[in-house]
Length: 165
Length: 401
Image (cartoon, each protein chain N blue to C red):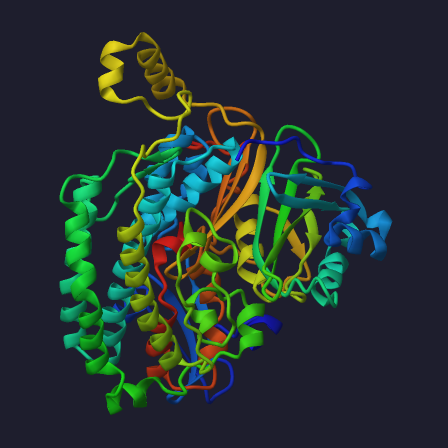
């Protein structure tokens, strides 16, 4: 289908139940939101992300009971450098929502959501391994894919694709 | 979920338990999966999966390739369902571009995806039965798998790394005689599934080894990120083909098999039932296959026909530009998921407006399903671990990427 311009106005997006629920819960926690290519994204301020996830999971109508994916994007050299991306999935409603948290390059740390969805365990370890983002209160934050003694985080943009580091 | 709440004991702790390494070179781990088992006699106290032996950095490689070059990489992450990965990736890029795909290409994609599902499930059934000790099923399954691989070879020239789908449609139209082959296969296959079921479903030894083994409750399955047949066997009625239809799936009639058992036997039943549903979808695709082009009308994205290149200047220029410079994709991000034979295969593609993807992340179903393994096996016998690994149908290439 042809592309239509993205909607980024929070007030215009209030008709989406996910955005309305987040705004009702804590307006200050929501940085911005975007509706683009039939997908909804909400940026959450870093201190509130675990709470936001718990609210969306326990919400009586939204019921985002599954975390389908968790990953990260490195926007090096611009700041804030990292964006941790959460793909929420509601199995009863069959709907999806993307949450994002921006992290500064000199302090890439965010609260772990393993307590909210246990499936975040491997995903957070992978992001820690490949991007060097630390997840606070993760039960077992160690390298997962790379060898334990590896130096550097390969998916960072300042890490070369080939050749020597 | 004891493996989540405390750090695992990797050195021999209490006098009763010992640490046993299973893998990475163990025939029943379906690749190079290493499991660190803490055992008390024959009982498994704790399991710690250790992965990464096949990590090749495909996500990083994708960032250095043009959008059309990434299609070839997507085959390699899962050698049992290359078409599903091709489809998921091209759907994601097409969503970024806002491309409209002609109906014939959509229908062929559905047909080939269901054949891929059959191919993957046959390998699963054969190896899973082999793990548990039913040797002959393997030979039956690989007989039919050979037919499916020959069909893949007909359309793409390759048996396994097909790379047949392109951004904007298919690479070429299907060859003459392909549909007859599919028709003949669709006619014999339901009978062949009966043969597998004759060997296993009522077999008392099979039931003894699978019933009540590796139980996974529906709530745990969702929380641990399980998808696909593993989730449906725990009684959660979810199928992305029906719930979030892609390609032409909304035009097909099919049932979603769900079982309440939650054990290895339930997963077996769900997948065997899916074999029957898949062949029904292939039959519907054969009956209603529309005529028309297999590539979208987007000269800046889709490579032109060779014939037109020889007569039209424009086509030659577009061909040259796509091959040398790629095609620019409008900035944005999409998450596209499809129902792979193992569960939810998702591609998260971020574009910064250039001809190379800024970030490609693959959400692989085996990766998430593997997290449910400790929940299934802890407190049970070592022999059941083998059955549990087989029942979640993992592919290590997809886990490690």
